[in-house]
Structures are given as C-alpha cells and as structure tokens.
Image 1 (spheres, one colour):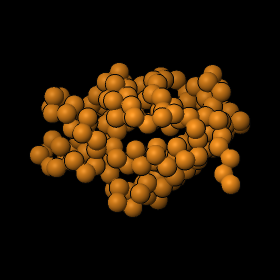
Image 2 (cartoon, rainbow, N blue to C red):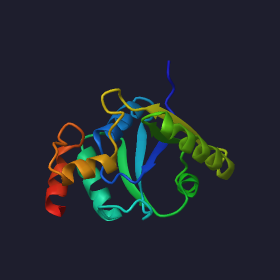
Image 3 (spheres, rainbow, N blue to C red):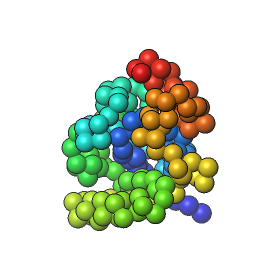
Image 4 (cartoon, rainbow, N blue to C red):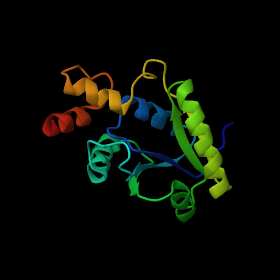
Length: 161
C-alpha cells in the first residue's frame, strides 16, 4: 500500500505547459493528495509568456484536477518549500541528458533543505521528446502542436504570435 505524503510542489518555467508536464502531474497525483505547480519567475530561458500569463494558462488547464493549485515564486524553490511546509519536489525527466542537471539540482536542494525529497519521474514514452522550446518553434513555423499541448495553450499562442 502506498502512503501519500501531504504536499508536493512541481516547479518549472512551464513556458508553455505541455502534455508531458501534465503526464507527470497526473501520475504524481496518485502519490500526493495536494500538488502545487510553482511557476518560476526567472528570465534566463527567454520566456514567451510572462509568469502571470503562465499561471493563468495553467490554472485554466488544471481547473478540473482536484488537489492541484498553481502559484508563482521568484526565489529559491527550497525557500518556497520551507515556507509552505512541502515534503517533496516533483521533477520530470525526458531523457538521460536531463538527469545530470536534475541530479545536481536535487543535491543542492538537499543541502538547502534536508527535509524535502526530490521525486524524479520519467515522462511517458510518447512524450519524452516534447519540450516547451520545441513546441514554440514548431508553432512558429506552422507545425501541428495539438498532440503535445492542451487546447488552452494553442489558443494563447495564436493570440501571441
């Protein structure tokens, strides 16, 4: 029997949220009764959507998923975890290339807050190649992204680009 931990966070830039992100979220909801998607406010990835727009889009996409909240944070994610009494951080892995970065990040996070565990989840086999950057480029050149993102994302991209 799996005993659910109280709360987890799923941090990321989510620019935009993809079906790969949602796959990780939905599977994580089987382990945690409450998950907070935390939109990072960093600009280092040259975002298309503002953090406020990303929060708005994600809230629309997850509105029918019980136990999911959406928040924004500009600081260290371990400070967010400490402030909100979070027990776990969910991180998705698409390929082996993601592992090294995520492993180093989780090690640093453990140094910053030893009370929080990092849970790595592999993205579904049919979505492992999907990234937010790839979605934006595919859309810009007229490619069909409907299999890779929720409809709410497509509507927002059409307004923006």
